[in-house]
Image (tube, rainbow, N blue to C red):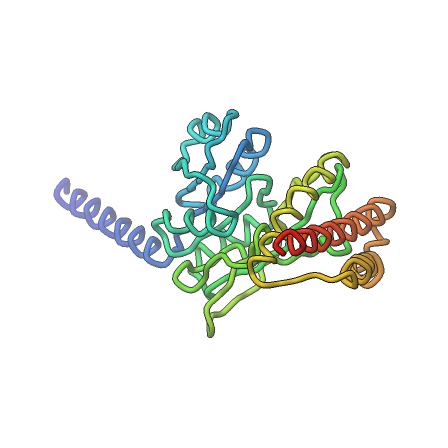
Length: 279
């Protein structure tokens, strides 16, 4: 009788092991990537939202001087220090450090909401049915979640097969570019983007990013004229506030639409300034 019990135990253990191996073969393993620089106020929230979703987390840090490294070390992620290469270049570098084909990429000031976590876990359990996945991003503007206008749904590809996709775009506005013939599916849930907490931050970031963007546009051969200073900001406001229903977000929607118009003006004004200084 003892021998039979031992045989049954061995059989059950073997079946359990086979089941685990099967589940591992079917389950889609995911690497998460984040680039950081002085993100101590955001990084913990981002990393905690990835717990139970990502099978490895890679943080590529641009030599932070705050507590970012300590927080990442505490939470057990793979922390890599790398001098900043540019937003697109740094994100592609991070993807290159991953060991799984499927990559989930977040910014340090982003986090997964619960419906998006559930959707990604379902993809993991069933195996990927597409080469990339697109999801909504919902942004907080001075403490309020914006649900209309230029900022929502703001669909982004953030989960992708690294063999068939890469980061591209014009710095600082990066985007995932998928290979021809690749498939993309939409998943429910939001990336929560904890963006500007004050109007002061809006002005500071607008100045920083429009400088980067103007230089990147110039480097790619783009040029601006006085017409761009008149037409493009106006169209940016009309598009976001009226055509995309930014007015539904009340005063915040109006301020946001005007902010985007201001950023558009700055971008083309700085591009014109670069042009003049080159001749």
